[in-house]
Length: 200
Image (cartoon, rainbow, N blue to C red; front, side, top):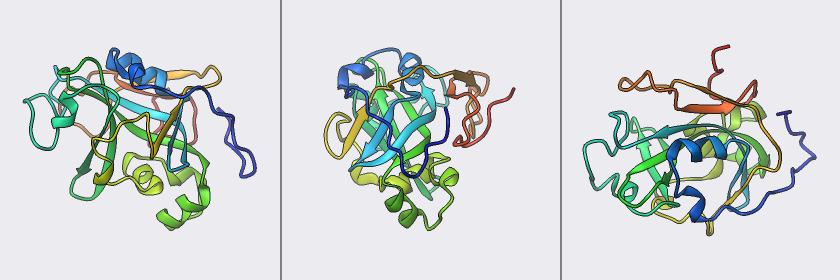
């Protein structure tokens, strides 16, 4: 996927409804690559995600519901936002049937909408660094705990299906110590906007 220039804004695909997320979390993760994610009109093309399933110990839901992860056990198509290492927010999309407690972590975006707002929030100009990590993109899009439990098919969220085929690559997830062998990290092959390159 070619970098987007400052003057171009890619056309948006059809709006994604909550039913889109009522599928296997790995299928949803793959299909989110190339989709557009906006929060109050600010965002870009999803270029990297990770899938988490309640049956594997890296998932927050593995040991059952808690006040923090309760939204994961509800119906699909809602946002799960949590604080990582007490520093930054991470945003996840709840998937599968109610009770499955599975979700997709959004790891990186290619900025396409609202770059001025992103640069102001991130205090930097370099477009490739604005959303190249789960904490970076939430800061750039203004996502906080206030967005936790909100539906993904209503304001302030807007999600749109990809409008062209993308070359999706898979690899092991990043920054975890359990279930490290599962190749459930997905991204756009060769994208300059990833949090970390995929092995060749």
